Length: 320
Image (cartoon, rainbow, N blue to C red):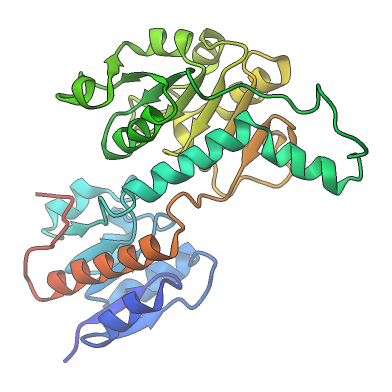
């Protein structure tokens, strides 16, 4: 008998095909997340689950899935999964690390440059019929060249962002739990504490994991410590930033601009103030949304799942 697998959303077809070749699959055939009650019902007889960040994998779900042998997530992050609970039950958890590093770094720069040069405002200006002449004061923004970039979280993505910053001749500061070996030599990046990074950076870009220690790391005090001309970029997790404090900082000019790929909650309601502030860009968590990267993520998730149902080591495993 083939293993039974629940795939919790439409994903790139290659991932579905790889799993379907060896398993009986049930696909939640929608672009919207599977409702919690439906999820708990459908995992009852499943040997494996192929999930996304929108599914909470916790004791309640694990109790509802007594046959579960593996949890395979099509994402790098896994803060939606109670990894300890899975480990206690001997259930391996897989993710898709590494593959989206360069794509996310590219998108970070797309956000940074769009905010600095006010691209979205420019598009709306033209669409509104306001463009009647060239203006010497129209939609001016800061230069990137020679500016100071502060990177919060100097992992793979943070380092890829730093590599691109070198081409702009930027001064690079970073903060992390501790200095990262080789970063100073490779990128000319200087390790500083968060307070110094916030005070000196023209651009602050977030690439840290979401943990109890980093939740609302960028709060009212942190925003007040930034330059009034500073631009904040978040391509990490929405919960790293206190959104109420960010609204106040943008409205009062404590900082100049923000660009967010991730929010708290997700999706951010269409009537949320951040969506409508002229000095804030909000996009729907698409930093990894290149064709090649999402295809590879789907493949890696399928490989993890198939290894798990066979009782083999997962190629990319979160828990020991």
